[in-house]
Image (cartoon, rainbow, N blue to C red; front, side):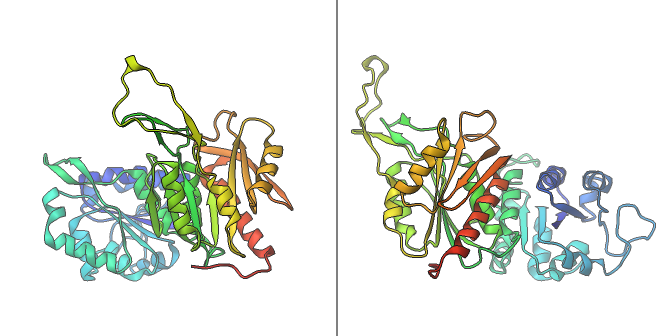
Length: 406
């Protein structure tokens, strides 16, 4: 897969190198397109060395250049070969050219020529960001389907404080990945994903929780988007930036998680429950912070079994996949949970193993159904999400009843 990375003139241009590297980590070829102003901040050779690709720096290039392409109509070729166009950083001038349809350089011409998804990550002075002209241009671009990764707020290179800082690299990459459709084998499916932990309040400052980071669920949501599905993500508290799903719902407690999932379950054709929902919650929540001197004596009660409730109330055609984080007797426990909670499949992993599971970047485990088992060796959570969705496609193909769609 290949994307074009547009780099425009601003102090944040150097961050595009990190973005390019992150994309390469996901096995994506990166073709960098630089404006003249961008070259005042970063040299084309930097990106050529990082990507192993020629860097496009002008519309009419010289045939003996090592950093540019040698065709004056190459914007058409690039436009047809890319899966997406990402512009990071995107200056106010570039956004204006895009909104007004001005083809004044290679990048703006490429924008007009491509039919691929477009993602822009603005970076500029706070007053330029807030200017009505910039906001109007952004609104125009959004109405045309361009994804805008909102800038952060903080100390700017100009010395001012406010909005305008280039968004975090992870947020930019995730926004791009959500727009790249690798296949359409989940087109027509509405995938509901739960992710993260739940926090059960003890008093206004303390809670019961678990070690779930939400990374697995967010990876499943992203992977489903890239395969053409409509995605709803219900998430407990995490530090992650959500992928660009059709609906995102943030919750905190198991009761809130249950309410959000039940309200959306009927519209989903596939539900994948990766969330680590707390099994117990305090019977009563102290209205004020409990002082150390008083001590804490917790009286706990079980939370609702959301997965079992969904399994008992699903309609014909709905697929339901659960997760089981185990430390022993993995297969036996997973099979029992599969039957008890009326699941189509269950993903089980051994969270006692180092380097996988809660908080880790990698995972491994087994996907177990009534008919087959798939063993997944250690890999990134995004890769593992692909195996889980492969199982969804396989389960759907075996169903005789029509699938439920929103």
